[in-house]
Image (cartoon, rainbow, N blue to C red; front, side, top):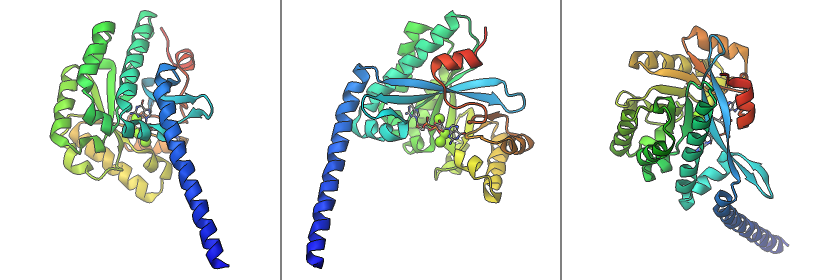
Length: 274
Ligand code: C2E
Ligand code: MG
Ligand code: MG
Ligand code: MG
C-alpha cells in the first residue's frame, strides 16, 4: 500500500540521514588526527607570464591524504575545517610549511618569483594572519615581498577589520590577491578601497568562454588597468583562451594548459632553476 511505501521511504530517509551525520562525525574525528599524523600536504601550481610562458609565481594548494578515502581535494574538507574551527590549526601549519619550503629553496639557490597562500574568509576573520606571518618569519627570514595572500571577496564582509589586516600585511611587504573575482557580490563597491596587487579572474569565466564571459573578462581587465591592479586568469586550458587574454591585455595566467598542481618535488624539477 502507499502507506507502507511512505513508511519505508521515511525509514530509508532516516537511515540515510543517520549515515550522513555519522559520516560527518567520522570526518571530524579524522580531521583532528590528520594534522598530527601529517596527512596534509601542499601541491604547487605554477603561474606564468602569458606572453612568454615563464614562471611568474606559484600557488600552494592543500590536499588531504585520507587513510581510507585516499586523496581528497580542499572543497571536501575546508568547509568542515571552518565549521569546527580546526582551520586555525591547519592554517598555521600551511603558513609554516610554505615558509619552510621558501627557506629551503632559498638555501639551495633556487629562484622563485613569488608564492601564493589561500586564506579562507573564516580564517581571515578569525586568525591573526599578520602575527602568524611575522612569527613564522622570525624563524625563517624569507623575503616577504615574495609572499602573496589570496583572499576572496567574502573575506571583506567585515570590511573595516579586513582592510586593517590587509594594510598591516602590506606593511610587512606582502602582496594581496583577490581570488575568484567576479563571483562575489560586492566586487565593484569594495575594489577601489582595497590596496590589492592582483585580481584573479574566476575560472568560470575562462572555462565558460562564451560571449557573456568574454564581456565580463574585458570589463575586469579594463577596470583593473584603471585601478592599477595586475590580473591573473585562472583555469586556462586552451590556446584560444590565452590568445584572447593576451589580446585583451591580461598579463598572467594559471591552469592545466601550463600545469596541473604538482607535488613539491615535481614542481622543483620542472619549474625551478638555479
Ligand atoms: P582557488 O584558490 O581558486 O584555486 C584554484 C583551483 O582551481 C584549484 O583547485 C586548482 O587545482 C584548480 N584549477 C587550476 N587550474 C585549473 C584548470 O585549468 N582547470 C580546472 N578544472 N581546475 C583548475 P583545488 O586545489 O581543488 O582548490 C580548490 C579551492 O580550495 C581553492 O580555489 C581554494 O579556495 C581552496 N584551497 C586550496 N588550498 C587551500 C589552502 O591551503 N587554504 C585554504 N584556506 N583554502 C585552500
Ligand atoms: Mg587561490
Ligand atoms: Mg581562485
Ligand atoms: Mg576558484
